[in-house]
Image (cartoon, rainbow, N blue to C red; front, top):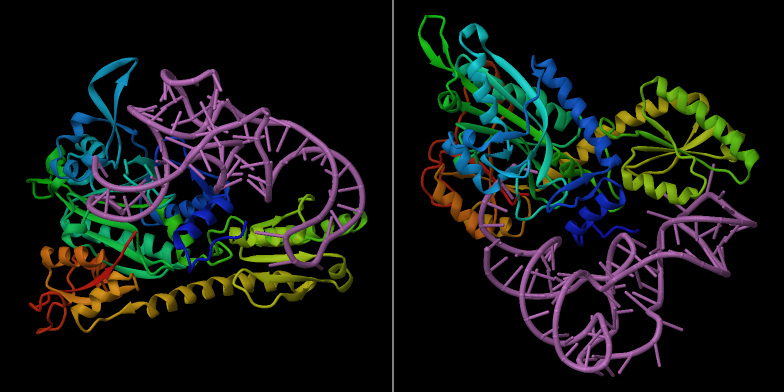
Length: 492
RNA sequence: CGGGAUGUGGCGCAGCUUGGUUAGCGCGCCUGCUUUGGGAGCAGGAGGUCCAGGGUUCGAAUCCCUGCAUCCCGACCA
């Protein structure tokens, strides 16, 4: 059951963690995934964190159907072009071929904006601030559990606004107060926020912003996206309204999503050779208690105390599991809970009852600590806090250590070809130089980074203005004047 | 969709070159006993249309043909 070493075979390690920790396995249909209880419990925690923030920023949940008439999709050329190759189509119903086939939604802009056309007549109907939790389908040539599956779970927010300023504010607000807040402050994964280059944008989007995170193999993972869609969908589906001034205008759209893919990110950002390391905010169990005993008499005494500890911690809103399975020995349980990434483990046996203490060990390592019964609750609360900050600071140092500012294109090319990390360099903003890098190194522009101030500005003022590179800065690829600083990396 | 490989108990594999009698091994699983503070030991046991279809042969997991599926490497993608 030993895992492959992360440093020796990262993909094999990834697969083995998912399998051995009981997170997921392949489904029957090509590229599909069975999410098992441990993986789903993590997803439920992530969902709750995201959903709470979506609601806190003024949105409501609703639900649209999975099946969309194919004819509807055909109206929207850009999205269709972007998604056509990966759309799965249902062609038969009731044993007969259908006149108008039904697609399994790859995303829901089309059906939602078609519906919005009936919901919006006046500026008084705006904004529409809606979100749905859903499954979506995209046929993929190659799938990997959580990272790329033919069906995945996500939330997709679809909002309609009176002005472009409002829509851009929304795009940025969601990124800052929902996604980055969850990913950085709950999942403890640092990253770079920024705009996508045109080639990497969502089909039909005017701007896509993203949070790009670094995995432990130094590749990038796009953890979420938030799109400013302008008036394209409103014009395509007729979402027109009377303005305050009595004129007519088309609504401005945003859409934004985060998916089960982030679970893959969680695994790859924090995991080590022993398995997962889960931040306390999403760990289905934050503390596992392993009782130790040699006979029934000891067992009942130990379990009684374990239950008392569990009850006590539970009242402090700590998620506790007592692993009282009799068929496994303690060492086996230690290894298993480490693999599953539970932050803290409490060992309690006859010796501890004697000394009125327990042994506690952290998934982040260090010596086991002996902690007295009466100090236990306070110790655990503090240890969980420390756990999170240590996990984040470890990930932050790793990221910082692997961001490189190349002095020349040769240097950058070599660095990126070997997936040595993220390269930050000035770029001329042109698609052909971007394509050249991709061809020569497999690396793409992950984003055009925004600073905190840039993001705050977008949230407050509704524009993506930002200072470009200093005048005279040259594109690292072509030597032409640079218009942007770009973050390059190989990506999942 | 191009290039490569592989399909054998739940999982991982051997056997195939050179066809042969009861298809093995490890892990896991079941039962019992002994164990239990870092992945337990012993004993007994269950579990197989050898991917599918066709062909060659006295005889096919093994050789031939066709199909299907999966995996890896590319291109596509959250």
